[in-house]
Image (cartoon, rainbow, N blue to C red; front, side, top):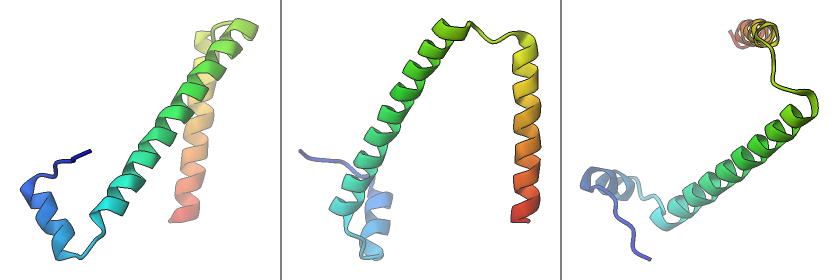
Length: 79
C-alpha cells in the first residue's frame, strides 16, 4: 500500500525525524478503534431506545443541564 502526504506535511515529519510508518499505523489503528466504538455506541443507543423509548424533550433538557454542570465542574478543577 502506498500513502500520500502533502509536501509540507512530509517535510515536517522528516525535519523532526519522526517515524512516518509508525505514526501512520497508529493513526489508522486509532481511527479503526474510534469507528468500532462509535458503531457500538450506536447499537447500544438503538437497543436502549427499543427498550425504553425515545427521550422526551424534558429528558433532553435535563441531560443538557447535567452535561453543562459536569463541564463547569471539570473546568473549575482543571483551572
